[in-house]
Image 1 (cartoon, rainbow, N blue to C red):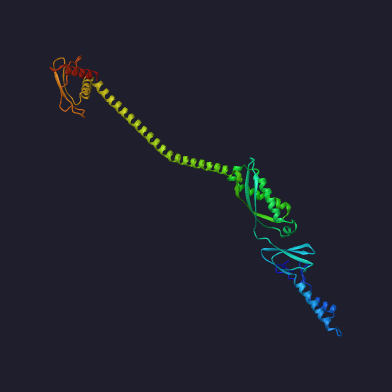
Image 2: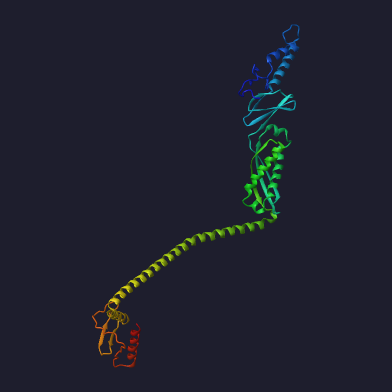
Length: 374
Protein backbone atom coordinates (compact mmCIF):
# COMPACT_ATOMS: atom_id res chain seq x y z
CA UNK A 1 0.00 0.00 0.00
CA UNK A 2 1.46 3.40 -0.94
CA UNK A 3 2.16 5.63 2.03
CA UNK A 4 1.13 8.84 0.26
CA UNK A 5 -2.47 7.76 -0.40
CA UNK A 6 -5.16 9.70 1.47
CA UNK A 7 -6.62 8.29 4.64
CA UNK A 8 -5.40 7.49 8.11
CA UNK A 9 -2.62 5.06 8.84
CA UNK A 10 -0.83 5.50 5.48
CA UNK A 11 2.51 6.69 6.85
CA UNK A 12 4.99 3.77 6.97
CA UNK A 13 7.19 5.68 9.41
CA UNK A 14 4.56 5.98 12.11
CA UNK A 15 2.07 3.24 12.91
CA UNK A 16 0.14 5.62 15.14
CA UNK A 17 -3.03 4.86 16.99
CA UNK A 18 -5.01 4.88 13.68
CA UNK A 19 -2.72 2.60 11.68
CA UNK A 20 -5.08 -0.28 12.12
CA UNK A 21 -2.22 -2.72 11.54
CA UNK A 22 -2.86 -2.53 7.77
CA UNK A 23 -0.26 -2.04 5.07
CA UNK A 24 3.51 -2.31 5.23
CA UNK A 25 5.11 -0.73 8.34
CA UNK A 26 8.77 -0.14 9.15
CA UNK A 27 10.03 -1.33 12.53
CA UNK A 28 11.37 1.21 14.98
CA UNK A 29 14.91 1.65 13.69
CA UNK A 30 16.21 3.17 16.90
CA UNK A 31 15.05 0.21 18.96
CA UNK A 32 16.33 -2.19 16.34
CA UNK A 33 19.76 -0.56 16.31
CA UNK A 34 19.94 -0.63 20.10
CA UNK A 35 19.05 -4.31 20.09
CA UNK A 36 21.66 -5.04 17.46
CA UNK A 37 24.30 -3.10 19.42
CA UNK A 38 23.50 -5.03 22.56
CA UNK A 39 23.65 -8.34 20.73
CA UNK A 40 26.88 -7.47 19.01
CA UNK A 41 28.45 -5.96 22.08
CA UNK A 42 28.39 -2.39 20.78
CA UNK A 43 26.51 -0.90 23.72
CA UNK A 44 29.62 0.81 25.01
CA UNK A 45 30.56 -1.86 27.57
CA UNK A 46 34.18 -1.86 28.61
CA UNK A 47 36.41 -4.71 27.82
CA UNK A 48 35.04 -5.35 24.31
CA UNK A 49 37.66 -5.69 21.58
CA UNK A 50 37.64 -3.04 18.79
CA UNK A 51 37.24 -5.70 16.08
CA UNK A 52 33.97 -6.87 17.57
CA UNK A 53 32.64 -3.32 17.63
CA UNK A 54 33.59 -2.81 13.96
CA UNK A 55 31.94 -6.05 12.93
CA UNK A 56 28.78 -5.01 14.73
CA UNK A 57 28.69 -1.71 12.89
CA UNK A 58 29.08 -3.47 9.55
CA UNK A 59 26.26 -5.88 10.34
CA UNK A 60 24.07 -3.00 11.50
CA UNK A 61 24.75 -1.12 8.26
CA UNK A 62 23.90 -4.18 6.21
CA UNK A 63 20.62 -4.59 8.07
CA UNK A 64 19.73 -0.94 7.52
CA UNK A 65 20.53 -1.18 3.81
CA UNK A 66 18.48 -4.38 3.57
CA UNK A 67 15.51 -2.70 5.19
CA UNK A 68 15.75 0.34 2.94
CA UNK A 69 15.86 -1.92 -0.13
CA UNK A 70 12.21 -2.67 0.46
CA UNK A 71 11.09 0.79 -0.71
CA UNK A 72 9.60 1.02 -4.21
CA UNK A 73 7.76 3.52 -6.40
CA UNK A 74 4.80 2.70 -8.61
CA UNK A 75 4.22 4.98 -11.62
CA UNK A 76 0.77 6.27 -12.53
CA UNK A 77 0.61 3.86 -15.51
CA UNK A 78 1.60 0.83 -13.44
CA UNK A 79 0.40 -1.44 -10.69
CA UNK A 80 2.77 -3.27 -8.33
CA UNK A 81 2.09 -6.89 -7.40
CA UNK A 82 3.72 -7.48 -3.97
CA UNK A 83 4.76 -11.02 -3.08
CA UNK A 84 5.59 -12.36 0.37
CA UNK A 85 7.22 -15.77 0.50
CA UNK A 86 6.09 -16.36 -3.10
CA UNK A 87 2.43 -15.60 -2.43
CA UNK A 88 0.60 -12.49 -3.62
CA UNK A 89 0.16 -10.19 -0.66
CA UNK A 90 -1.46 -7.19 -2.36
CA UNK A 91 -1.55 -5.01 -5.48
CA UNK A 92 0.15 -1.68 -4.90
CA UNK A 93 -1.35 1.48 -6.34
CA UNK A 94 0.71 4.37 -7.81
CA UNK A 95 2.98 6.03 -5.25
CA UNK A 96 5.75 5.18 -2.76
CA UNK A 97 5.50 1.87 -0.93
CA UNK A 98 7.51 -0.59 1.12
CA UNK A 99 7.62 -4.34 1.35
CA UNK A 100 9.76 -6.84 3.14
CA UNK A 101 13.01 -7.00 1.17
CA UNK A 102 14.24 -9.97 -0.77
CA UNK A 103 14.25 -12.93 -0.20
CA UNK A 104 11.16 -12.48 1.96
CA UNK A 105 9.24 -10.36 -0.49
CA UNK A 106 9.47 -8.70 -3.87
CA UNK A 107 7.32 -6.52 -6.12
CA UNK A 108 6.58 -6.84 -9.88
CA UNK A 109 5.49 -3.81 -11.90
CA UNK A 110 2.87 -4.21 -14.63
CA UNK A 111 1.85 -1.43 -17.04
CA UNK A 112 -1.96 -1.43 -17.09
CA UNK A 113 -2.56 1.59 -19.38
CA UNK A 114 -0.32 0.73 -22.32
CA UNK A 115 -2.28 -0.48 -25.37
CA UNK A 116 -0.62 -3.62 -26.67
CA UNK A 117 -1.05 -5.15 -30.10
CA UNK A 118 -1.10 -8.64 -31.59
CA UNK A 119 -1.54 -9.70 -35.21
CA UNK A 120 -2.64 -12.92 -36.89
CA UNK A 121 -2.92 -14.15 -40.50
CA UNK A 122 -4.75 -17.36 -41.32
CA UNK A 123 -6.64 -19.16 -44.10
CA UNK A 124 -10.24 -19.75 -43.07
CA UNK A 125 -13.26 -21.50 -44.54
CA UNK A 126 -16.45 -19.53 -45.14
CA UNK A 127 -20.07 -20.61 -44.90
CA UNK A 128 -20.22 -21.53 -48.60
CA UNK A 129 -17.08 -23.72 -48.30
CA UNK A 130 -14.67 -21.24 -49.88
CA UNK A 131 -11.21 -20.43 -48.54
CA UNK A 132 -10.15 -16.88 -47.78
CA UNK A 133 -7.01 -15.38 -46.26
CA UNK A 134 -7.86 -13.08 -43.34
CA UNK A 135 -5.48 -10.94 -41.34
CA UNK A 136 -6.48 -9.52 -37.97
CA UNK A 137 -5.03 -6.93 -35.61
CA UNK A 138 -5.98 -7.03 -31.92
CA UNK A 139 -5.40 -4.15 -29.53
CA UNK A 140 -5.61 -4.91 -25.80
CA UNK A 141 -4.40 -3.85 -22.38
CA UNK A 142 -3.97 -5.37 -18.93
CA UNK A 143 -7.08 -5.05 -16.82
CA UNK A 144 -5.84 -7.03 -13.79
CA UNK A 145 -2.12 -7.13 -12.99
CA UNK A 146 -2.48 -10.03 -10.55
CA UNK A 147 -4.44 -12.20 -13.01
CA UNK A 148 -2.11 -11.27 -15.88
CA UNK A 149 0.98 -12.41 -13.95
CA UNK A 150 -0.17 -15.53 -12.17
CA UNK A 151 -3.41 -16.97 -13.65
CA UNK A 152 -2.05 -17.91 -17.11
CA UNK A 153 1.51 -18.85 -17.94
CA UNK A 154 1.51 -17.02 -21.32
CA UNK A 155 -1.38 -14.54 -21.46
CA UNK A 156 -0.22 -12.88 -24.71
CA UNK A 157 0.10 -16.21 -26.49
CA UNK A 158 -3.23 -17.32 -25.06
CA UNK A 159 -4.84 -14.18 -26.48
CA UNK A 160 -3.39 -14.88 -29.94
CA UNK A 161 -4.69 -18.46 -29.99
CA UNK A 162 -8.09 -17.43 -28.65
CA UNK A 163 -8.29 -14.69 -31.30
CA UNK A 164 -7.66 -17.21 -34.10
CA UNK A 165 -10.33 -19.52 -32.72
CA UNK A 166 -12.86 -16.70 -32.36
CA UNK A 167 -12.19 -15.42 -35.89
CA UNK A 168 -12.53 -18.92 -37.34
CA UNK A 169 -15.87 -19.35 -35.59
CA UNK A 170 -17.25 -16.01 -36.77
CA UNK A 171 -16.05 -16.28 -40.39
CA UNK A 172 -17.67 -19.71 -40.73
CA UNK A 173 -21.06 -17.98 -40.49
CA UNK A 174 -20.53 -15.73 -43.56
CA UNK A 175 -20.18 -16.45 -47.28
CA UNK A 176 -17.06 -15.46 -49.17
CA UNK A 177 -18.65 -12.41 -50.82
CA UNK A 178 -19.60 -10.98 -47.43
CA UNK A 179 -16.13 -11.62 -45.99
CA UNK A 180 -14.49 -9.94 -48.96
CA UNK A 181 -17.16 -7.23 -49.10
CA UNK A 182 -18.93 -5.07 -46.59
CA UNK A 183 -19.25 -7.48 -43.64
CA UNK A 184 -15.70 -7.03 -42.30
CA UNK A 185 -16.65 -4.47 -39.66
CA UNK A 186 -19.45 -6.70 -38.38
CA UNK A 187 -17.08 -9.68 -38.29
CA UNK A 188 -14.58 -7.64 -36.28
CA UNK A 189 -17.20 -6.68 -33.70
CA UNK A 190 -18.41 -10.25 -33.24
CA UNK A 191 -14.83 -11.54 -33.02
CA UNK A 192 -14.02 -9.01 -30.32
CA UNK A 193 -17.04 -10.03 -28.25
CA UNK A 194 -16.29 -13.74 -28.54
CA UNK A 195 -12.58 -13.21 -27.80
CA UNK A 196 -13.31 -11.16 -24.68
CA UNK A 197 -15.71 -13.84 -23.45
CA UNK A 198 -12.98 -16.47 -23.85
CA UNK A 199 -10.34 -14.33 -22.08
CA UNK A 200 -12.71 -13.74 -19.17
CA UNK A 201 -13.31 -17.47 -18.83
CA UNK A 202 -9.55 -18.07 -18.74
CA UNK A 203 -9.11 -15.18 -16.24
CA UNK A 204 -6.17 -13.79 -18.19
CA UNK A 205 -6.57 -10.25 -16.87
CA UNK A 206 -6.66 -8.81 -20.43
CA UNK A 207 -9.15 -6.35 -21.91
CA UNK A 208 -9.62 -6.24 -25.71
CA UNK A 209 -10.05 -2.67 -26.94
CA UNK A 210 -10.29 -3.17 -30.71
CA UNK A 211 -10.32 -5.89 -33.39
CA UNK A 212 -9.89 -4.99 -37.05
CA UNK A 213 -9.55 -7.13 -40.18
CA UNK A 214 -6.86 -6.47 -42.78
CA UNK A 215 -5.35 -8.17 -45.83
CA UNK A 216 -8.63 -9.96 -46.52
CA UNK A 217 -8.20 -11.64 -49.90
CA UNK A 218 -8.76 -14.97 -51.64
CA UNK A 219 -5.93 -17.51 -51.68
CA UNK A 220 -3.08 -16.95 -54.12
CA UNK A 221 -4.24 -19.74 -56.43
CA UNK A 222 -7.63 -18.15 -57.18
CA UNK A 223 -6.85 -14.46 -56.89
CA UNK A 224 -7.02 -13.93 -60.67
CA UNK A 225 -10.51 -15.41 -60.88
CA UNK A 226 -11.68 -13.37 -57.91
CA UNK A 227 -10.18 -10.24 -59.47
CA UNK A 228 -12.15 -10.86 -62.67
CA UNK A 229 -15.34 -11.39 -60.68
CA UNK A 230 -14.76 -8.21 -58.70
CA UNK A 231 -14.06 -6.26 -61.90
CA UNK A 232 -17.27 -7.60 -63.45
CA UNK A 233 -19.19 -6.54 -60.36
CA UNK A 234 -17.63 -3.08 -60.54
CA UNK A 235 -18.54 -2.81 -64.23
CA UNK A 236 -22.10 -3.86 -63.46
CA UNK A 237 -22.32 -1.26 -60.73
CA UNK A 238 -20.91 1.39 -63.08
CA UNK A 239 -23.36 0.52 -65.85
CA UNK A 240 -26.25 0.50 -63.41
CA UNK A 241 -25.22 3.93 -62.17
CA UNK A 242 -25.01 5.21 -65.75
CA UNK A 243 -28.45 3.79 -66.53
CA UNK A 244 -29.94 5.36 -63.44
CA UNK A 245 -28.31 8.68 -64.33
CA UNK A 246 -29.72 8.47 -67.87
CA UNK A 247 -33.15 7.62 -66.49
CA UNK A 248 -32.98 10.55 -64.08
CA UNK A 249 -32.08 12.80 -67.02
CA UNK A 250 -34.73 11.51 -69.41
CA UNK A 251 -37.59 11.26 -66.95
CA UNK A 252 -37.90 15.03 -66.31
CA UNK A 253 -37.80 15.67 -70.06
CA UNK A 254 -40.47 13.06 -70.69
CA UNK A 255 -42.60 14.49 -67.90
CA UNK A 256 -42.20 17.99 -69.33
CA UNK A 257 -43.04 16.78 -72.84
CA UNK A 258 -46.08 14.92 -71.55
CA UNK A 259 -47.19 18.02 -69.67
CA UNK A 260 -46.80 20.13 -72.83
CA UNK A 261 -48.79 17.66 -74.90
CA UNK A 262 -51.50 17.47 -72.25
CA UNK A 263 -51.66 21.25 -72.12
CA UNK A 264 -51.83 21.41 -75.95
CA UNK A 265 -54.62 18.81 -75.93
CA UNK A 266 -56.56 20.81 -73.36
CA UNK A 267 -56.04 23.98 -75.41
CA UNK A 268 -57.19 22.21 -78.57
CA UNK A 269 -60.22 20.85 -76.76
CA UNK A 270 -61.04 24.30 -75.43
CA UNK A 271 -60.60 25.77 -78.90
CA UNK A 272 -62.80 23.16 -80.57
CA UNK A 273 -65.44 23.48 -77.88
CA UNK A 274 -65.34 27.26 -78.21
CA UNK A 275 -65.64 27.00 -82.02
CA UNK A 276 -68.52 24.57 -81.68
CA UNK A 277 -70.25 26.87 -79.25
CA UNK A 278 -69.68 29.75 -81.66
CA UNK A 279 -71.15 27.76 -84.55
CA UNK A 280 -74.09 26.82 -82.40
CA UNK A 281 -74.65 30.43 -81.41
CA UNK A 282 -74.43 31.51 -85.06
CA UNK A 283 -76.81 28.75 -86.09
CA UNK A 284 -79.22 29.82 -83.35
CA UNK A 285 -79.02 33.41 -84.62
CA UNK A 286 -79.64 32.34 -88.23
CA UNK A 287 -82.47 30.12 -87.08
CA UNK A 288 -84.09 33.01 -85.27
CA UNK A 289 -83.80 35.19 -88.41
CA UNK A 290 -85.08 32.35 -90.58
CA UNK A 291 -88.08 31.88 -88.35
CA UNK A 292 -88.76 35.63 -88.60
CA UNK A 293 -88.17 35.97 -92.39
CA UNK A 294 -87.64 32.61 -94.08
CA UNK A 295 -87.34 33.82 -97.69
CA UNK A 296 -84.98 36.71 -96.93
CA UNK A 297 -82.79 34.47 -94.85
CA UNK A 298 -82.75 31.83 -97.55
CA UNK A 299 -81.70 34.40 -100.15
CA UNK A 300 -78.95 35.70 -97.91
CA UNK A 301 -77.58 32.26 -97.24
CA UNK A 302 -77.68 31.52 -100.94
CA UNK A 303 -75.72 34.67 -101.70
CA UNK A 304 -73.13 33.90 -98.99
CA UNK A 305 -72.65 30.42 -100.37
CA UNK A 306 -72.12 31.74 -103.88
CA UNK A 307 -69.62 34.29 -102.60
CA UNK A 308 -67.61 31.57 -100.91
CA UNK A 309 -67.63 29.41 -104.03
CA UNK A 310 -66.67 32.00 -106.65
CA UNK A 311 -64.26 34.00 -104.54
CA UNK A 312 -61.47 35.67 -106.59
CA UNK A 313 -63.37 34.90 -109.80
CA UNK A 314 -65.44 37.03 -112.19
CA UNK A 315 -68.57 35.02 -112.85
CA UNK A 316 -71.60 35.96 -114.96
CA UNK A 317 -74.75 34.11 -114.01
CA UNK A 318 -77.83 34.11 -116.27
CA UNK A 319 -81.17 33.16 -114.86
CA UNK A 320 -84.02 31.46 -116.70
CA UNK A 321 -85.72 34.82 -117.27
CA UNK A 322 -82.72 36.18 -119.11
CA UNK A 323 -81.56 38.34 -116.19
CA UNK A 324 -77.72 38.59 -116.05
CA UNK A 325 -76.02 39.09 -112.75
CA UNK A 326 -72.34 40.05 -112.42
CA UNK A 327 -70.76 39.25 -109.06
CA UNK A 328 -67.33 40.66 -108.13
CA UNK A 329 -65.88 39.01 -105.03
CA UNK A 330 -62.68 40.32 -103.41
CA UNK A 331 -60.36 37.75 -101.84
CA UNK A 332 -60.44 37.61 -98.08
CA UNK A 333 -63.65 39.68 -97.80
CA UNK A 334 -66.98 38.46 -96.66
CA UNK A 335 -68.90 41.26 -98.45
CA UNK A 336 -68.68 41.90 -102.24
CA UNK A 337 -66.51 44.74 -103.46
CA UNK A 338 -69.51 46.35 -105.26
CA UNK A 339 -73.18 45.97 -104.64
CA UNK A 340 -74.60 43.24 -106.81
CA UNK A 341 -78.11 42.51 -107.77
CA UNK A 342 -78.77 38.86 -107.25
CA UNK A 343 -81.79 37.23 -108.74
CA UNK A 344 -83.75 34.77 -106.71
CA UNK A 345 -82.42 31.27 -107.12
CA UNK A 346 -84.21 29.60 -109.99
CA UNK A 347 -85.53 26.16 -109.71
CA UNK A 348 -83.31 25.07 -112.61
CA UNK A 349 -80.59 27.67 -113.21
CA UNK A 350 -78.79 27.74 -116.54
CA UNK A 351 -75.53 29.27 -117.51
CA UNK A 352 -75.13 31.09 -120.83
CA UNK A 353 -71.80 30.09 -122.26
CA UNK A 354 -69.89 32.51 -124.50
CA UNK A 355 -69.16 31.65 -128.13
CA UNK A 356 -65.94 29.79 -127.63
CA UNK A 357 -64.56 26.31 -127.66
CA UNK A 358 -66.24 23.44 -125.94
CA UNK A 359 -63.73 23.57 -123.04
CA UNK A 360 -65.09 26.86 -121.75
CA UNK A 361 -68.59 25.48 -121.90
CA UNK A 362 -67.53 22.46 -119.94
CA UNK A 363 -65.89 24.71 -117.33
CA UNK A 364 -69.11 26.74 -117.07
CA UNK A 365 -71.20 23.64 -116.61
CA UNK A 366 -68.72 22.38 -113.98
CA UNK A 367 -68.98 25.64 -112.05
CA UNK A 368 -72.76 25.44 -112.33
CA UNK A 369 -72.71 21.99 -110.83
CA UNK A 370 -70.35 23.12 -108.06
CA UNK A 371 -72.55 26.10 -107.32
CA UNK A 372 -75.65 23.96 -107.22
CA UNK A 373 -74.01 21.47 -104.87
CA UNK A 374 -72.90 24.22 -102.53
